[in-house]
Image 1 (cartoon, rainbow, N blue to C red):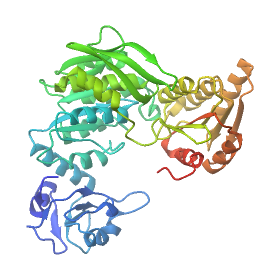
Image 2 (cartoon, rainbow, N blue to C red; image 1 turned 120 degrees about the vertical axis):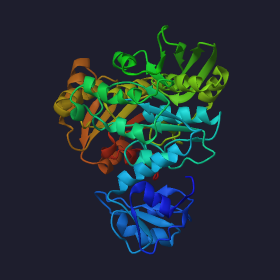
Image 3 (cartoon, rainbow, N blue to C red; image 1 turned 90 degrees about the vertical axis):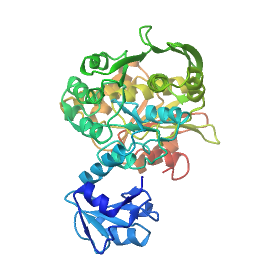
Image 4 (spheres, rainbow, N blue to C red; image 1 turned 180 degrees about the horizontal axis):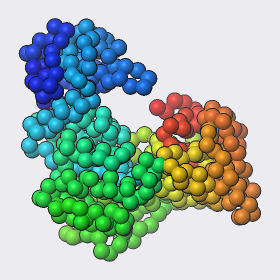
Length: 465
């Protein structure tokens, strides 16, 4: 963050100094919402959440070296008291971005693949200059401004991930740090229960391209009709990426190795170069193309793009993490989150990675699907039941449609897949451990709230947080 005196922070946030706060004291360290992350010179933002109230940790933050607390009430230590700390943090982030005119902002959104694409693009941008990007999925009204506030005088690129839980959310995030390049990956069924239809989801995702300036660039997926239609919603120039020949940045001659990793020839308007991804699953090709197209628009040579994509390892946890145990069991931890589209991609990756080995899967019922929940979860069950598994464990509540779909698919296929329900992650880990034999492959995949990463951790013999 650029250094700011408390008086200026109070001015930006329409706040009032309290608790013996010195208006001349300068915040030079990070802006944090976790008192355990405080460093000398930091600003601690007190946020009242469902399980904890940051105001209760104000004194601890100042003891750890915070210059002051951004709070919504007096906290007995130096503070800037504002009406709403999340709104104030957004105002502060906007002011910091405005003070850094040399920074180019690249925004990424989509129903699936945002974090992987963001990670790849951040790596590519870093070849051109100092780059700031979110930790994992800091993509909402709290994580987004926190990321922007990490930018300093040396920063040249801000690669930001924008999520939409409702109409208007992406537009709000885009106002905090207006993007010059906007990348839209896909429109799927994630949060269908909130939006009601894929068309409504597309309207929300398209707020990113509407926020672009006339001299900006919209990087759009030519293979997704709902994304392609967003070209008519922006004054920015459009560049296309995808698998088809009509895309300016595309993948040619895609192959997948025995570990489920894709290789292809990256074609751009100025040449081509070979890419061999270390990321698992053929769906990673689309994420790599999106990152490549944005990096190409930033001016990175195609050979450098291909080199960086070929060296990139998974950066954010619990996303297609593939680990081989000493006994030869392979654990695929893709437990960060799930929706119908990412489930299909994960099972395709499992199929490629497993080859002729016995395969198992641990899943949980998908959420936020509204009236389509039962049908889409039954579809998930059919997908899993028809995936040639030796065993399927469905964990937690809401499992009935998944179990019904899986059992129907097993009957139709005439296979002997074992389909079972586990009440919780602890029970799932125990049951699965008893079934696995050396050489088996197990996929762990479910919505974030299901906590299936604990199943993967148990299988790997430790806490993988």
